[in-house]
Length: 186
Image (cartoon, rainbow, N blue to C red):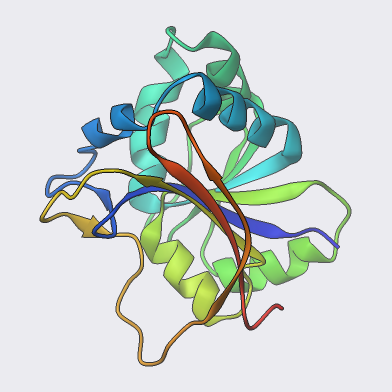
């Protein structure tokens, strides 16, 4: 059975982007050889990326013309992608399709053969899939910075969501990669 993994960088105070959309400058505080290598390993592990509409639009605007990281750009442009949206009619980025009911789609895809499915960014889609019990693992790179404001990665919930720590790895940059399994899948 395929698994669904959420991957994101997050500040110590819980934000995955700053106060403005795509304010990701804090990522550079974590970036280095180790995180670059980790990112390339993720590329080998997965065969499908899932984005919410906002993340899809930002990624689709950036990656088709990205040149500074050509191996990752080739991966991002070539891999199968889903844009989870109830408002998009079509997706123009290579190998992308639009899905309105992401929970039903993930349930179906988990039964099919394939590699790991990843949600990159997309806090709202992550929240929907967590509530539906479809997230098998959360991988967070905790960046050593407090932003003070921004867009929280984890949305308010009506109940606690316990997690089981699978692994933690400190990076030379001071960032820490954490792997968790939600208790509902443990």
